[in-house]
Length: 388
Image 1 (tube, helix red, strand yellow):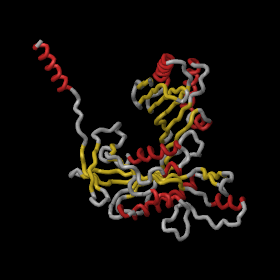
Image 2: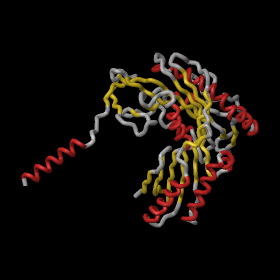
Image 3: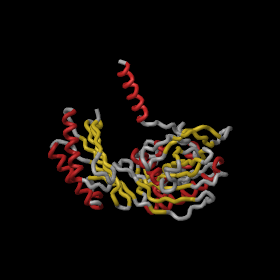
Image 4: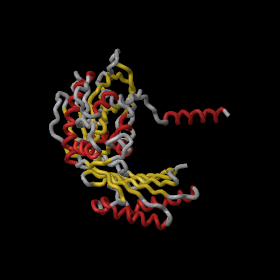
């Protein structure tokens, strides 16, 4: 009995020595703008992926939290603006050396004042065009004024990027600002009246957006907490899609301003877009992807003749496919049926999809996720998960 106990103890010691070590995260001092000027924060040791930023704990919410939901109508635009701004920030703030924090300097009150129309005499001027006195005008005259002076600006999103010094002090190292601009201006001439729509061309939006960006930069530099800090600022212009669009809009231009400057120089054109499949635009512009999904849909229909349809969304940079997301809504009668169909789709992925882009396939039933198939660019085999 003693020998067995001794052997058990030895085995436990060996297992303990081989067990993974869960190292403690770094504890650092974060510079703040409160009375003490400093507070303790924690940096997680690991990132979920190389392209992700580590986030300081205790997590600080944005000073203008919730404003974007009230200003940007399409939920897809909200998600893409936030995630896309982080993606573009990687070109300026290396995730290995910078930490992410939601915006702490452009407050809710300030932001709402910037998003309004310009009005003479206001202390915080709106950045959308001024309109003349409309008293006594009829509907057609009011429509003409709105069409000539659309609200271009929807939202301004701030993200902060922090660095750690040799003394374990975390301080502001850079700011990214996303400026959301409308592609379609929706307006009313009277409260409760019908909505009218005015398309805004890309060229017109860029001209106005760059003017707005310069003013946003000037005002950001004047914020009290930032006035004495030589912080670089990256600014990106985002073109929203229509309110009922099934794909989000996209970033169209970006620029970086050094910490000692309050003037924007050169702009870099951003060539990226989301494309819906099936669609005439997708078929005409990216016929190879369209044909690939058309063949895939035919194979799915052979397995489930009564399914609804396959819906694809491709993300392109410089007209090269970066990620393809596919939704397959099907009505199932049991778990075995779900597993069998997922295995079938897995085989279609192995045989029919190239590996130079990220792939994500969501299989759903009655609005609920049933299984997930994902594959990272360059991988030979996908990852599969069936939900229970």
